[in-house]
Image (spheres, rainbow, N blue to C red):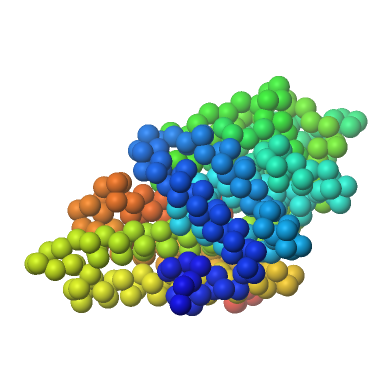
Length: 391
Ligand SMILES: Cc1cc2nc3c(=O)[nH]c(=O)nc-3n(C[C@H](O)[C@H](O)[C@H](O)COP(=O)(O)OP(=O)(O)OC[C@H]3O[C@@H](n4cnc5c(N)ncnc54)[C@H](O)[C@@H]3O)c2cc1C
C-alpha cells in the first residue's frame, strides 16, 4: 500500500480528498526541488533563503488550483497536512509559512468584520497583504493576557500606538504587522493592522539563536505610530477574543511538531539503513530498532491527537484544553523523537549535513512558542480541577 506520507503509519493522509492529496504532492515537489537543497546551508548561515519566497507564493497553497478545479474549498485537515509537509522538510520554513497562512490569516479571518475579511483575505492568499502576528513583548510572554503593555490611544478616527514586541517571526518579509495593544480608554486588548513602514515603527533581528536559525525573529519598537480605525480588527475587543485566536492557532503548531518528528525520523531511518558497523547495517541491531519503534510510535500518537483535534475544529468544536493538551503532548513527543533520531545517527547526529541535528535544535523553539509546556499544562490543569493556577 502506498501512503501519501511514508511515515504516516495509520495513513491519516487518506482522509484527504484526491484533489487535496494532489496539492500536497505538488507542494512536496517544490520543496524537494527548491527548498530542501538549501536548508542546511542557510541554517548554518543564520539566514532565510529569500529566493524560496516566490516559489511558496506561486504554490497558492491557501487555495490551490487542484481544489478550485474540483470545486472544493480547503479543509482544516488540508491546512494541517500542508503544514506537516512543510515541517517535514524544515521547521523554520513551515513556521514562516504558518506566520502568514496560519497566525496572521486566522487573526484576520476570525478577528475582522465580514467586510474586512472580504477585502483582506484574498490579498492574504496572494501574499500581497503579507502580515505577521505581534503579541509577545520583551517583558511579557506567558503573562501577556494580564501584562500586555503596548498602548493604543484613540483620537477621532486615528489611534496612536506605543510599545514594543519581541520574537515576531517573518517581519523581514512582511509588509503588515498585526499589533495587539491595550486601549487606554477601556483597558481592553485590541488588534491593529499596521504597515511595517509606518513612521515610528522600527525593528531588529534577534541574533544568537540556536533553534529555528532559518526563521528570522525580530524585536519591534512602536513610537507614536498612527493608524486609522479602519485598520482595527472589529471583532477583537478583549483578551478573551485573543485567546479564541490562540486556541485555533495551536492546532497548526501541533502539525509543525508532527512534521518535524516525521522529518527527523525519516532522516534517521535513511541513515541507519545505510550505515554499517560490525559488518552489517546498524538498522539490524535490536537496540536501534527499539528506538525506531519509539520514534514511529510517537509520531503516530501525535498525529492521532492532532488529526482528531483538527477534525473537531473543522466541525466547529473548539475546546481550549484540547488545543493546549495537543500542543503540549506533541511537543513532548517531538523532543523525545528528535533526541532518539540524533542518538541513532551517532557522531553525525550533531553534524547539520545529516538533517537530524537541525530538527533536534529546532524542536526547542517549537516546544516554547505558542504557549510553553507549562502554560499549556496549566490550561489543561484548570480544566481538570476547575481551579485556575494562573490568570
Ligand atoms: C522562535 C520563536 C518564535 C516566536 N514567534 C512569535 C511570533 O511570531 N509572535 C508572537 O507574538 N510571539 C512569538 N513568540 C513568543 C512565544 O510565544 C513566547 O516565547 C512564549 O509565549 C513564552 O514567553 P517567554 O519566552 O517570554 O517566556 P516566559 O513567559 O518568560 O517564561 C519563562 C519560563 O517560565 C515558565 N512560566 C511562566 N509563567 C509560569 C507559571 N505561571 N507557572 C509555571 N511556569 C511558568 C514558562 O513556561 C517558561 O518555562 C516566539 C517565540 C519563539 C522562541
